[in-house]
Amino acid sequence: MSYSGFNTPQKEDKKTISSRKKYKISIIVSDWNKQITSKLLKGAVETLTHQGILNENIFITQVPGSFELIFEAKKKSKDSIFDSIIVIGCLIKGETKHFKYLCKSVSYSIAKINLKSSIPVIFCVLMDENIKQSIERSGGRIGNKGVDAAYTSLKMMELNKS
Ligand code: DLZ
Image (cartoon, rainbow, N blue to C red; front, side, top):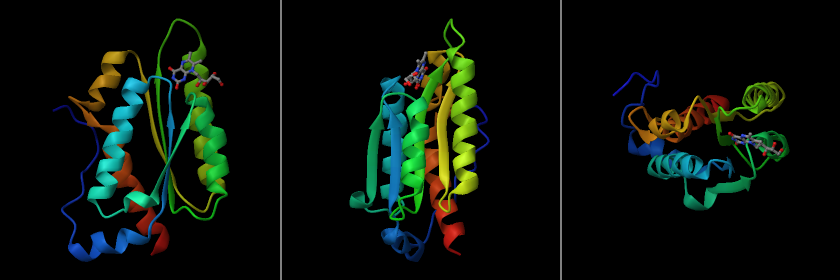
């Protein structure tokens, strides 16, 4: 497997898993490139539930494209019921300038929400040169970035509460 940079956490003890029952997570997922974002979503949800988050505490919102992740994340970050937000999208380079400006605005805006928000917003937006790269990162050779985002969300919620 290629190096992904992500250190998968050690197996957690029962007490830690059980302590996560209280957490509520919003996942905002883009419909654009759904064949990829649905796999990222599946990876995230399976990891969260496996790590102690209750199914009924995972709130999924679908938006048309990655650009709309910004508006929805801003809204959800003001909603005090959530302990963490994960935004999932997939931007693939095309022939126009859309890719460059979408990548810039989505990453910049989600970073900006994190500066203001009291809850962590986890960034799971692939920005790939082609569909092959996206397939590799959504359950292929390089793993599933949805899984990594779920672990990051757990870590950040726990840090935020400590
Ligand atoms: C317009 C557009 C393009 C060209 N490419 C993508 C993409 O690769 N991934 C993605 O999530 N969304 C894309 N979009 C749609 C924009 O994110 C947005 O939905 C529209 O510009 C409407 O605001």
